[in-house]
Image 1 (cartoon, helix red, strand yellow):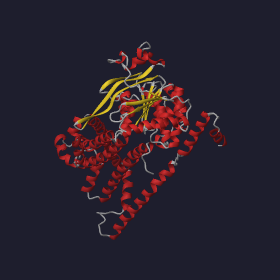
Image 2 (cartoon, helix red, strand yellow):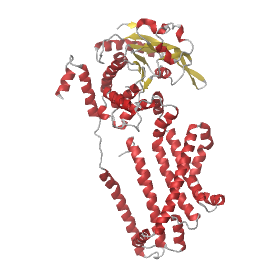
Image 3 (cartoon, chains in turn red, yellow):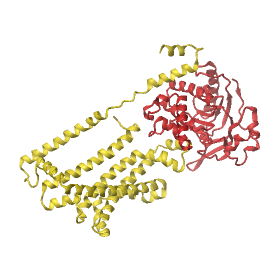
Length: 286
Length: 298
């Protein structure tokens, strides 16, 4: 539970130069990146990425020289105050946006969950979960089995036939999680998915997400501005600075799982991270 | 219930069971049981106010007739008109007229929908087209369709084509506008969600854009129908085609014969058809779409 030094700036091997197709990365076991630090296959590799947006007559640098290596089955919390470009970073990893400099590699197209559940209001819960399968042309029988399995996983089986507007906020996010998992992507990107929920629901969904993550073995990049949440969920916490977003520090979280938000270790780590975050925020007032 | 409480309180107890119970409990607290009103009850609830309203109108009508301010050949009593309507319903002439008119309505509206959808889809897709014809579509919508008839007759003569031309011109713009409006107002988060789930190209249209735009498109169809029906009536009065009796033509004939009873009876038929399609067909479809999405307020 000791803070580890930042990984930012760590030299990436030659593999990351040039246009390596996103899919091949995870499939090359001999590549230097894959062997790096013994802990399994790299599923997301962010290499010296900067993102600059045009703003008025000038430009705004949202992200600057971000480097991050995420391995198979890892849960990484990305934490920062407002304006740190957390969502921009996820969009780059998702392929919804392109970096101005640097490159992003990932094992396959990631799945994405938003703060808004973004369920399709014209489809029932089960049809929402089914859609990504349909889009991948999965056969009808297989779709049915897979949807049943996913709904069971997020405990929404009794609500399969309901329309999204009939569900509570927490149930909608669980449905969205099931839908994101139906995409069958190795990497799951989550952009403050529990930000709009009440505390009680959020705590329970943390337990659920941890369980499902362990069951499915996905790689998760979880963006949040809630320090406790980051500490409760992540294997690592990547703390970003604001304007421009840079990696300020990385924290390794060695608290045994399953965790709870009220675990004293979680609180202690959150205090350390919060102190660092406050320092960072205060630096903008000077 | 006792089991749930124990499961939560015992720190060493099965965590998974505790979590399951918590989720189930929260769901039970937060979700309302689905309320399904019986169809009969709902039908009755929406019918009786209409019945009373019609009754009041008929009573007022009768009251005006009884003041004897207007001659009988100008304003016949509701009883006489309804009697006449009943008699007309026994003749093939009225049914033939209804058939002709409805056939034209179906063709005209169908064609208008086709053209409206194509134009709407193109305009919402290409910014250049929107800049070029976007406001023109709305402009066309404000143009009274009857103003097109003199030119339509010049173009096509006294033919079916002249009627179709104006019906399509009347209905297509509001159908196109409904689609454009629907596509413009899709919440961006839904399009993003669709894209990250793998909906691109044609699949995006089929699974995301078209269904998302549906409520507004339905509203466009509904007002398109109203425009089509009005244009059609105007057309049938102006463009008289021999040996082909239509509802509009019946109105014209009744006026020439100063047959107020026949005139009002025909008008009732036109009114009933218009209302039926508007509220029963389009209204029901629209309500169903909105209810499914939780867009109906009570």
